[in-house]
Image 1: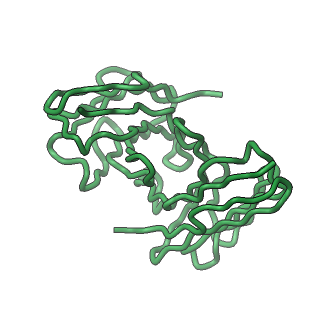
Image 2: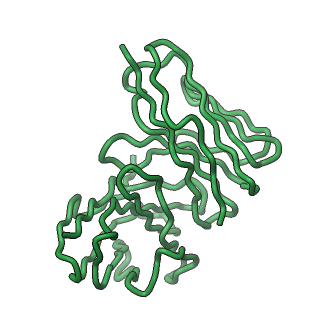
Length: 112
Length: 111
């Protein structure tokens, strides 16, 4: 069964530092997404990416956030200057046709 | 923004019992998805519904896409201990758009 792979599984960073979360989507998928889940809360949409550009983003995805597909396989989420409230599980997802999403296992980001 | 109201928030049941949970929305969705999330893991897709009125089964799981496109339910029959987890509904307006998640139903099964 094809998987979405996320690294690292856990990242601890100091407030104000930059972090890059990495994802390898399923190889034939065309749509890529980042979601986050604050502990004990529901999953929230951050951004979607299709055809090498952002197709949709939420209010959470402000100027501190950026995404990139630097090569044919990786999809990254960068947070420029982390805040305490950025602590959450970050999930990457991909979809072939834009319907059934496959999620990765997540990166737990802890900002101290 | 769009919101999904999922209920119940939690359920504690005996092994072998049937379970039902549902989601409602004030907005129309064109696709409904049901996910299960285990602790420390990402959501895993259980059932996808693409057509209003559609009733779909996956083993002991059955889900329906409401006729109004504003609701969906998930039933689990003859629950077993490994059904424990958090179940999320999610709605999609159009292909490639953002998924809107419900608040989740935490299911606990007593052996």
